[in-house]
Length: 109
Image 1 (tube, rainbow, N blue to C red):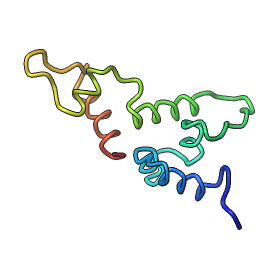
Image 2: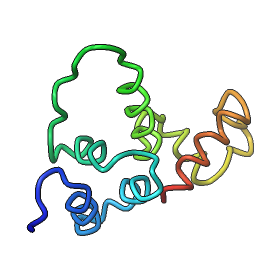
Image 3: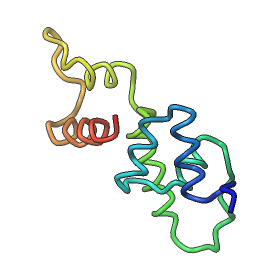
Image 4: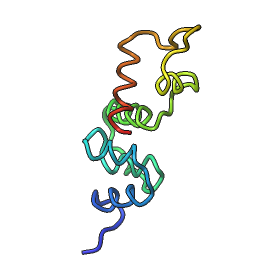
């Protein structure tokens, strides 16, 4: 049977082929679903919701932003990569905030 469209196997294979390593790693460890990765990249559209809570959609969007680095300022992204500015200090509000963002990115890169 051919793989196509929205099957997890197809999406994982396409993530590999298109070198989407951060999203691929997140799918493989279960941080996000293959469907969420495909929607984020514009490969498929999510079916319309059946109503109810929007918390799940917001949680998924937050996870994707942490994985892809979107939602961070340029300075915050630089601090995650190189560490805080020696003269200006950290741009993050707390050590916990920095750790949460750093561990989310480190686990998927």
